[in-house]
Length: 196
Image 1 (cartoon, one colour):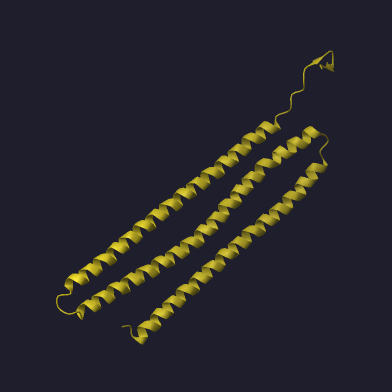
Image 2: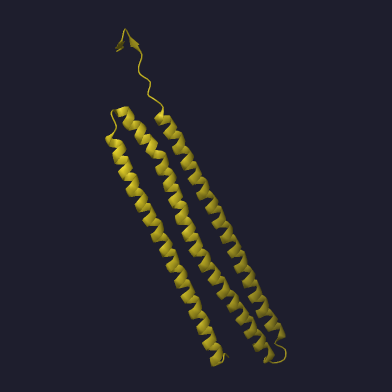
């Protein structure tokens, strides 16, 4: 049985963990708001620059070249935004995982202590049952650790795929921009007139 002091200490530890996680969640929201404010400022500035550039266009070819020229930076900015957003989410997730691992370790420690305490007051001949319970708890702990490792590996693989996709998108945009910027070839003419 837990004493009132132990219960109060456990409640205090849980409250400290909750407050710490709440603080980290607010930090994540602050980072997200800051990222979106930076994006809004940049978008406003880019819109003004784009409008000025569009007003100075003299023909359709210049308009197409301007459009192609703006496409690459937009794709790069979108990829950078997605990376920043992912980093913020990953950081917040890491804090939650860290807290969950600490709580799990504490719960496992308390469970082992409770089993040991129960074993000390157990009647003679119950050693086998106590060993079976300890073995089951140990097996559950190992299974949890294996699942946790697999989840981390899956998250790492997903992150690598996201980064590869972002790189591929930016590279494809650069290639498309270069192709669009090349001057259009005029059709062949006979005697100064277009052939029909």
